[in-house]
Length: 505
Image (tube, rainbow, N blue to C red):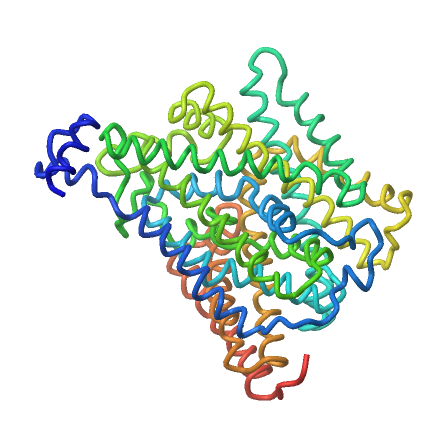
């Protein structure tokens, strides 16, 4: 085996496996361990979460309320692809690259955030929607947290969805402009993307989204495999070694990991935006027993995408004194960064294919963001969506507002999107924990209550500390964030554990 290893290394231009410098260069295990943990997490903790919730054979909304527009049966494999593309916008790419400025520690958050928070959040959001006639996350929150929180979530989710639509409108437009330099500019591509969003928001789900998403899914898979493969090859040949795990803060400006990295990564670990997307697929599933594969599974797949880009970003950009100076200088995740990495890792042809995959991600999330905003408003005001004129009356103003917001500073919009995104995730998790405590078991509720408490601390600390928030010092922000999280947990324990009885769902 040693002889075979030496010959393999020789064929790859490496002198010998017995050379210590080569061992250091080849045996970088962090990425592979993290990848294995995500897969194991789906197989084990995902199965546990499914067992706790106990999907059954009850009739689903799409068979009971089929309308050919939003309630339409979709095959499980197609539903998985749509769910993945709905949730995997620029978050697992731009967010993961921006989070990589803090170094390899970002991969820990992607892995454990995905398994114990993000995937649980997505699964509960989708399954609770199925058990409530395909209701949007705002309506679900009202059912389990009360009418006041329903109103908050209605406003909050519509604002978030419009911001998501804007972020995922400008982002792909910038990428497309890079592929057509000196020919078509960002403004032109923004209008083209906006027209597509208008059609996808207005038309029945199986007319555009159901038809195009399998093709987009292939692009997404090619992109992830290509970037991962090139990064691994460059690691083995020593041209761009992957970084091993360290908890050291590698941010050149010393910006603290807590809470900034946890907010910045956003969709690659947990995302409230997903809670607005899962109900769309919940309206299209013919069996509750498909929930784990589609809701929990799609989030794990997104975690893998985020892991790939985070590992690639850590390896691709220059480090100075061990700090991520190159990635920081490139401003983390943005259109230019993705373009540089795609072309640099895969060459002109492969880079363009990777770019197409990257472009597919935000476009397939932006269209459903506006669609979800329409459905949320329709649920809010009880507006029947079978009538095309009523769909048009809601769709046009939403897209018009999104177009004007697109002229604002992209980086500012992204930061507000990230914070509101994680705050919505926090609220959705508390709603899920309440459901489990009341209708499953009090002990079961902690699979949602623990990550909800964690995200309460993250969201509160960030808005206290960040420049776009209150801009307070760490000595004030950290204690306030912890007190807020403990208070939220205390309210939950008092109302749902100590005072309530478990009922039948």
